Image (cartoon, rainbow, N blue to C red):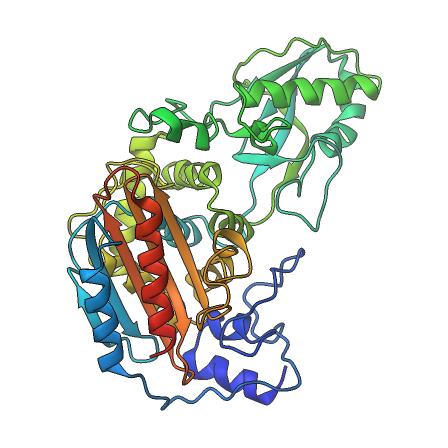
Length: 447
């Protein structure tokens, strides 16, 4: 790693710099995430191009321009609903401009920022999710540990979706199953208590998340990318088929049932670590991963593994982070629920902690944020503008709410944190509200 990149990492003390300087002319990388995760945490793993822009700690921001841009957003006919904004200097944490910063608003998928922060703290960045084969008598129990991204075949160590595979588990368990005379596969989904769907998420929004079970192959998506019912049973059926192909005479019918305490473990496979799951969730705004992480936070915290338990556990740890949690409502961990409420000040505080921490659990959040005009849910936004490649932020999309929170680099090389929440958007006006958000962010990049 170059001396310059090292100095920058020390200056801000955070993963955001070490990660961002692996590519581009600009503070934030415009290279897609490596398929194989970098060691965590590691500044030395970042690489630098031959010529890097000079980042100056004393680079100036045109505060008047930021204030003017905020005024334009607030007055914009495109913004429609109710607007809250915070813009701050990443290095000092000082607020540059704000509008109704503490008003709780519907955050849409910006709720995933909260889920990411709490999951990394409570579960731990290196924790993996174990899928286990246990044998009792003639039954083999497929026990779900929260991995809904199992592959249909063997393991793929370079992937998050498919890091562990059903075929891999069958390879490991087949000998023990044959010796025990196993004739039946039973799926154990008892880790999650239910319900499988949040009653607050209705209509079309319900189609954007899997039926919540602690076990699935590719989140039970069919070839058309739609989620299908009974994901755990489908995984069990796929596992039974793999066992049969290895000479284990099991039935194709797979019931649900809880493994007895005396059942012995025959084999197991492990998911990608939580830090990679968080990256996957943030980059693709993956609702299922968010809800599963929420349920696992509940389990770890001693709460029921339900939507209500996940909300209570997430909020309890959020308060320990030391952010303004007044008025917060966590009805789910993905942001699909219209009952959720967060403030722009809270989200900006979390982003600020990500920028300033070094060696803490939160620092890996930065790599998961999509990059403007490049990847994830920002790949089609801000192309050809001053903000292209210079914004790393989490998007939020509901029919009546839009949000964007993260980091950006100004024209003089100063790093800013920001959070923008708009809710109460009239039906049919979402696109223009998002356009207003993008215009504001482009103005910030030019400040």
